[in-house]
Length: 165
Image 1 (tube, rainbow, N blue to C red):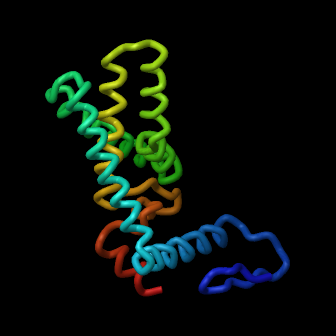
Image 2: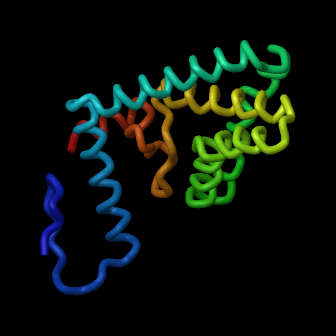
C-alpha cells in the first residue's frame, strides 16, 4: 500500500508504530510547507491573519475598554508557551487552545447572552493576538515539534530543512 504523498512511503502489511507515524507526519508537513510556498496558501493564510488583526483592532477601537487594557492583555495567550515545559504534546495542545479562534468567538457569543462590555473587549483583544501571530507566520502547533505549525515550519534552520525535501 502506498500513501499518495510526494515521497510515497510503502507499508509492508503491519501497523505502523508511533515512531513511523511521526516520521511520516514530519515528512508530509515539510513537503506541505514547500507546496504552500509555491501555491500561495501560506500567503493567503497570513493575509487572513492580518485582516483578522485589523478587524479586531478596529472593533476594539469602536467598542473596547481603553488601550491600556489592550496593551496589558495583548500577549496573554503566549503564556500558553509555559506548557512546553511539560512536553511538546501538552505544549502544543495548550498553545492551540489559546491560539484558536474558537475561544474568543465563544467569548464574543457569551457577550450576546450576558451583555458585559468587558467580555467583548477581551474577545477582541484575543482575536487581535491570534491575527497578529498568524500574520507573522506563527500558526497552530503540531505535537511533533515546536517549530511545526499549520502555516509551515518556523525558524531559519527549519526553513532550510523544509525546503531541502
